[in-house]
Amino acid sequence: MIVLDLAGAPRIFFGTMSFLRTLGKFLISTGVGVLLFVAWTLWGTGLYTAQQQDRLSHEYARLAPFAASAAEPGHEETAAGPPAGYLPAPGEPVFRLRIPKINLSIMVVEGVGEEQLQLGPGHYPQCRTGFPKPLCTTWHEVWPGQAGRVIVSGHRTTYLHPFYNLNELTPGDHVYVDTRWGKFTYVVTRLEVVQPDTKKVVVQSGKPQMVLTTCNPRYSASQRLVAFTKLAGK
Amino acid sequence: MKRPLRWRIAELLLWIAVAVATAVILVLLSHEILPANF
Image (cartoon, rainbow over all chains, first blue to last red; front, side):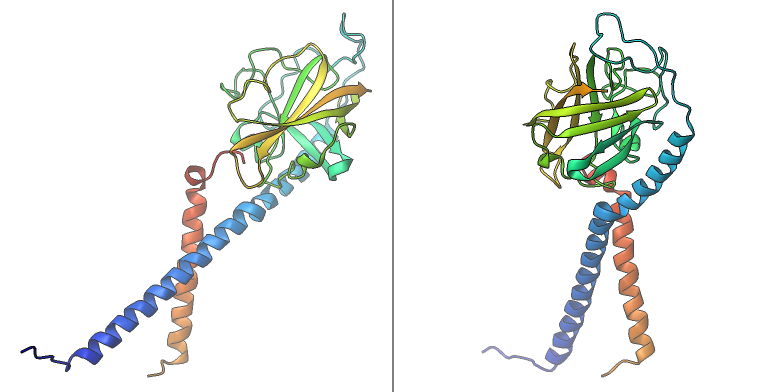
């Protein structure tokens, strides 16, 4: 015969209820913590970038423009770039990128490392002090206006997400670049989604062009979205 | 049994602290848990 002793049942019941109530509160609190983290990632990081962009804009405005120089021999269709030996330090403002179609006007900095992209879109540098491989090129740095491929990378989701709407560009849209050696206009030729390890983007070209790269789709880094543009004029 | 107001406010602050601590830990770990440069 089974004898049930129910004398301690209420205590066990209330003890279990108390534990479950505390566990529930703990889970709600940690859930709120995760939401705070998501909010910080999506918008909080943008506050830092906005502040840095402000600083970079002021810093850039104080830099003297370079004297106009002749076009490179053999590339008369393009304007010359900055003076030889122009090798900005990591995170230094190098030019302003304007894309009216997606309401973008932002300072581009030198370098595409994590720290530099937190400041704004980054210009792919050549490998030298301060720019370790693989986030640099083995060929000479190409600047807006010069023959060759200028590569600019930017965030899509975090840190002010400058390239959030890059997918909205269509062939024929204008991309304006204001530099210390002149103003240039590029025209979008095509958009392409590629794998992150593709070898199609960071390659050199003899033609004056610029590619803008960012993560794809939004809120993910599984692919890259690339906007190809070509120099249309000064 | 109803708990005193002061006790309930203290408990609420405790859970807020847990939420903030969770967020701070995740931010500190974000380099590990988030893909770089997305």
